Image (tube, rainbow, N blue to C red; front, top):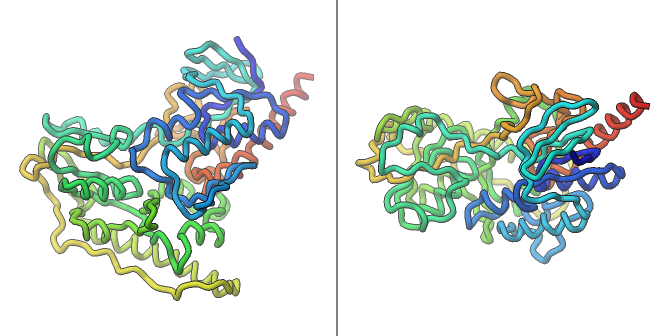
Length: 416
């Protein structure tokens, strides 16, 4: 059985950021990666996807963007190159093509079973992210023959879809981007929208992510929220990273022919039932967006920010069809594909330590799991609003590396 003081699961941005800080602390460690560095970016993204954050916001510990397009948005190949360069820059000790099959408690640490042999460590860091398993309603299993059911992991481009219409379920970042791309390919697209977060791509001449960064929105910590479970489940922003810096919304999608309706409430045979609450969901999204913009305007006034800015403005309220679709026969509507853009969840099937609650969620406090020497990185709002972003995981890794070092020192003193 091989030995390492710390084992990190995953060699994406979270695992690499933790590796950086463990190197600084001279703590022996290894990263176990089931594929290659940045594996999820390589294998689980569609062809045209770009990052939703501007290039300047790709900030990892000791490593930042140094190109000539700071306000652009990286493609997937560029993102993979960035993370691979970072791994080389910090000389991360990555073991690729190594799949973790089981993690279990041992005296003073953990045992780790992999397809490439067994390991033992004193601390274990889960950095495999929150998007391991697409969330698909059980009712999807009842779809009739002739209707294909896909997730964002399966989708690559419109040309690979069956001929016919497409129903996209979910109107967060993934859903709205796929709706646009597929509609422009010439197919009929219906988008089922539940709760969503609408924002402009830019406001008063600056990217919305710039505003969220400079005003401190992204640095909001655990102690600043009342309902932590709620904020950890807030949908992703309706954004698209494009060379034109366009704003994507239900309005922009309707302008190119996408039909919108409420969230899916039921699915039986060829019939789909949709909620009648679309207007309420859209009004709530508009209200929250305007509150964000109000906060930006207040910050500008209160800080005396004196750089040139455009005057304040508000986007047009979301247009809601007078009679949204509430019942649809897939066959009659010519729908041949359903894409479930309904979110993801982490995969803990390999974790043989009793740290999951009754809903299968990991019990942790800001990344410190409810078991000595066990940590997690990269989950939404782990310690800060930006925890799941490339730009945010570094701060969490720094904090948790210090906690991990203290844990190692404690068990070392007990052993002595």
